[in-house]
Length: 375
Image (cartoon, rainbow, N blue to C red; front, side, top):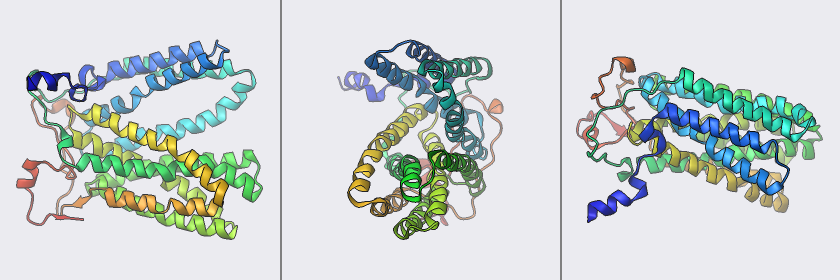
């Protein structure tokens, strides 16, 4: 009876990418998003348009977990930081492309802009079918249970830290342009150009963070350091906004760059510590938590700004990245670098998953070096 109850528990069921593979999920998700956006370009009813956008966003969300699993499967452990950093540059670069392309297209009508987005999604789906191949997975018996990585607090702490770090990211991204226009008298176009520069800088920061994590053999130690650096630059931003000096503009630009630098590190750490059979579910949980916090941040900060002004609102979030740094379960293994691994094509299907030293499991605990210390 216990087994029957467990089998009916949806939390025990594999996510789509875990069950059917990354290539199929990528292609279907992007293709469905393109189809729905194509329909949205022809409708005029606000409710139908809103429903179409929700469905398109849900379908396109399949990209996050499945593309993360691809990197986990195809790249060796000492290459994943760079690979995931390159993957994470897609979001800020995509925002920059949208900022350039959508306004003139929207001038010809909303349907033209949505049709452009639909075409991009269909093109991406075709690329996924043609260029993507699912990596080999460690073999296991179909009826063999896979132990949940959520039995220990490691993944929960990474999820918590990642969700907290979304707060400064969404605060800066949402209110940077408004702050520059309202307080410093910038034009909307000028403020938008500064934000575009910040997006390019954010993409570079994600890539640099991935390279750094490969060098030091840990995703979580750089993540903790960058969280602390974000808190420092937010304090400088508060000082600049309180004194209404140009210091605030430079601090705002740096905050926009630093606040997005940890995304790839957290994503890689989640995938590696979840393992190949749980990575899809774990990455889905990661994105859900971040999106929930991201959706709640702008309205809460808007209330604070309206009631107390920008300096007080920015000061209220300084503690958030510090709490995230405390939540990061970083540890350092002295004298141990990231182990080299052969290319995935040479790995036998039955070979166990290779993870970063950040992973905490019972077998690693018993074989850990006596010199290992926790930070």
